[in-house]
Length: 264
Image (cartoon, rainbow, N blue to C red; front, side, top):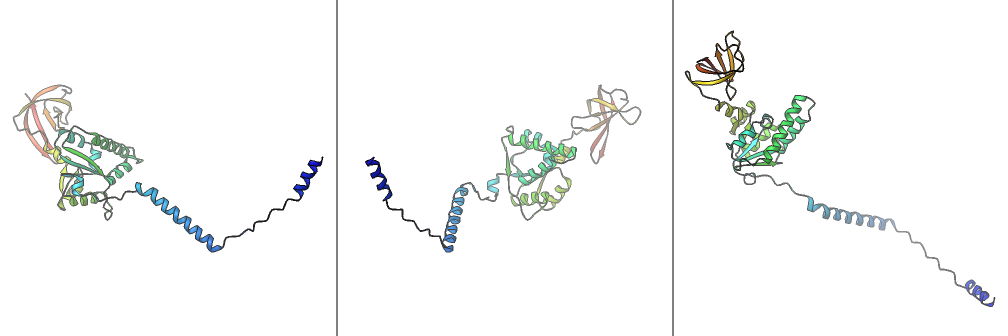
């Protein structure tokens, strides 16, 4: 009992804690602290983002590659460029710009089924061109260069073709006409196809398959490998048959040549 009482007396006589005065920061101090925090956060943000930020360097003729060939949207939609590339007739650098890719993507997303199908075919062609290894003399390069001073895609292609002294690959007659007038070298797929048409002369013989009857009562119609039409006399009702014919007349049309022949 005596020990417990002594302990109680000692606890009662312990000194009370001294209150610590609360000092409120001044307005000037708070503003200075806020400025310092913002400054530090800004510096930290720059340190973390700077390694990932790349300044776009304009393309030059040297970075583009030898013999640049600018690709028009119409060529990608047309699709024949794949066969031309694989044939080895083209060499140099086939350049596909980002703004052309964007236009193709818009076509592929179009509500019209026909345009949408064309756009998707163009995207498929782009993918196959980037993966092609058949033609080692032709490189495929996709660039982000975009002349900001020009709005239309066709005009942008003309500007870049002139800037890099390159050629412009297209199937668009109007674009080819405008670009050629400005001194740009044009590679028109349609011109190439026309030049590759089979050259026949009167009296030449060959075998052709009749596909259907002609307009006249006794005519049959067949097609050469390049799509050229051959009208054959006395071939009515011979659809599906291979016949030996002789060229009798050649007729030139705006779309190409039309051959008339008779069976041998």
